Length: 116
Image (cartoon, rainbow, N blue to C red):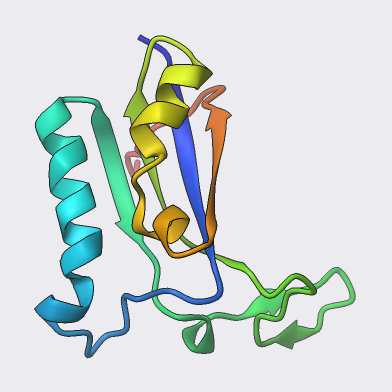
């Protein structure tokens, strides 16, 4: 079955190191629903942008700033028959419900990398 990456775009990640279970409940509920569907392959929540750095071609290393204000707060991979089904599976993501967005792309290749 084809795989689709779901990139979560919001103003910042809810997954601060000191986030409480109550603060993460909506995210955790969505995660658990996707796991229960049998369609989720992997998921990673990223920390807030204050913990991130951007490296530019010039060699500059700086904090994250995006002109549109949104960052990638996390991503997961789901299996679906096609991109339309993947969109239906991702539409209840808390980022979407809060006015953010998810970007869905077919996975071309890759997987976990084993150290040699």
